[in-house]
Image 1 (cartoon, helix red, strand yellow):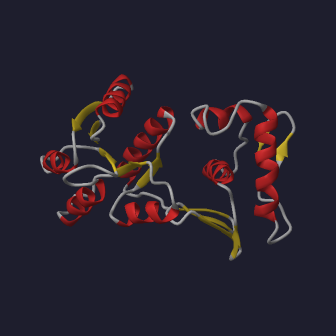
Image 2: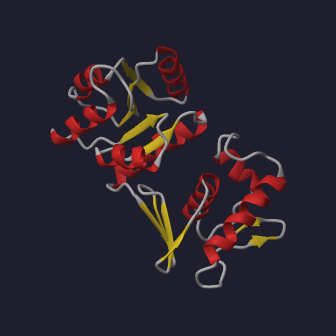
Image 3: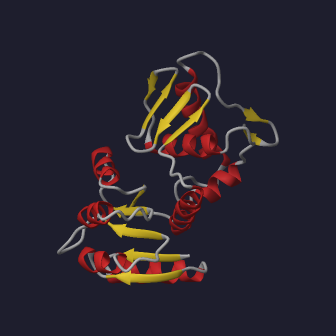
Length: 220
């Protein structure tokens, strides 16, 4: 897979290029949005990984330009700006996913590869639905049967993972590995407490659970 990394921080860029290359990908680095735009216009890339804040031309400006030019290559934004409004701005500019710094490198690779897979199938999901439970990945809003559910960031990440694996049993180890070992700690009590906090919020609207613990197996 050919990946264009657009990042002005030399150290961060070197780490990304090294890690993505070690994962078997062909990586090109552009030092800012202006050079990134020139490189993108050459074509042939499967995914763009773009930093949000850069000199000359920032990530939003670059992505808006490539979209206006008809380039639909999937874009993953990287940014220290993690507020909902910041994410919405980036996604409305044309990005397909948004990862807040600092991040686990395992998650970066997983998101890049997921974007490439979605491109092959012709769709990039921004809303997850499981029964009457709905999660908007752009606005970060969760509803069940039309009722809003207020989740903390860690609870949102946990519920997103569970919804992506609807109908499957998810173990604590799977959740820990998916988080890159940073979002959730490996301690059983940590995952249990997060699940316990999230469960009442997602079930309160209709008084019935949308997932449950399975003894010896995990969460289903």
